[in-house]
Image 1 (cartoon, helix red, strand yellow):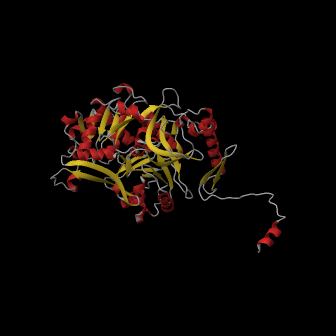
Image 2 (spheres, helix red, strand yellow; image 1 turned 45 degrees about the vertical axis):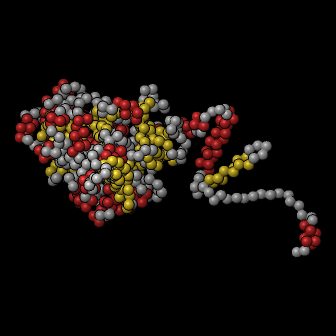
Image 3 (cartoon, helix red, strand yellow; image 1 turned 90 degrees about the horizontal axis):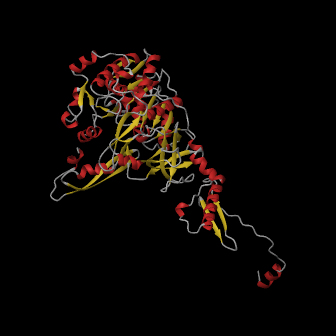
Length: 572
């Protein structure tokens, strides 16, 4: 169009109104428009954020700006981005877990169940089984003998036994004396066993002839041995009564605050640390579990976890306080997916625990498809991926539950029942009488969707680390949000709140890792390596060269003229 003609055609046109429509390509974008007043505009993708979530973000931003104006000298770290309603919801509403639990102990709960179902099958192992009455009689004989040898409240007894009926008898007998049991896995390296026995300072060690040969000499531990298959011990056991020991027959009354067990976890300085958990904590955990999963007397629970791992505590005690049966997988069988699948079918196991890495291996075995007797699978110890969760649900025909918790808080403190249509696998909500806080470095609660460190408070906290007052004070700190004098445990795990008060796992705040459910401090392994006279430096990492297959890999720098190879160090 010619310029003159264009000017004539547009001379009567007027711009009366403008309106723009924009769409962001980012999940969230903030536009700041200066002027006589500051204008802010938040744009978001509705497939990523809800309108409520964006409104919350806008309110927090306004709150921050208002704080700047009110006090220009205030440090940023001291600004609370949470409104009072949101703060109360996070700290109080989502931690509304109060539930009345009577004061009792593991032996009392077990004895009550024996009275209810004396003829019911309590334990199955290696083709043999014991009724509740038979199990209790054997437990009472051993408990009375242990008392005569010095076992009692505020003392500990180590248990170093292979997977068997005698292992179950030994654990129950120890808690009946009032002492705490210290599980010593016979498969542990000898140096670790020696350290644990020296550190825990047990009054006795329960073992058998074969296992005793791999234990440190009695003179180095200071603890006498009770070798269950020795003729003299068996004779002494036959002389003991089989009735429940009364309080006046013990060295002291057993109270809920007394330790029930001491389990050793990895230590960053190279020294494992013993976690002492009282009866009140584990009783809360077990009674909560029964309220949620409702075991019946016809149910059978698979006991396959090493007794040195805290999941074993509920495998041993949960079925025996509600009248269900426990099926103990034999040595080797507990690590073999095909053997486990056969055992589950043969013994009609309805409840089993798997760390995700073992669950992945189990699902790859043809015998696991489907595993008909199995009604519920409980996962913990590692992060459960969405893919693995979906494969378990479609393959096993059982419900899948994801639980989370540190050894320092009676096994598990949060729970979640998995659904097939969920895109993530949360660690869930807190159990009875438990509070969970997601805090920043200044111990202030963070907003929904923001990662922070998880702190746990409430009924399930451990007493602390045996003989490690300094470390206990460092990890078990005052709870600023709970009752006066209450404590909270710093887990070192990073989590975030999702909408509705559900926790999602993010990662670790330190170097700790988990391999097949076991907490491992790389520093402990590195300390063992550099303790060798020919190793100058060491670094340990976790590698996952194949999905779901984690392994520890150590890199070492040898001293000059060293001739060591990898095989020389693997046995350390």
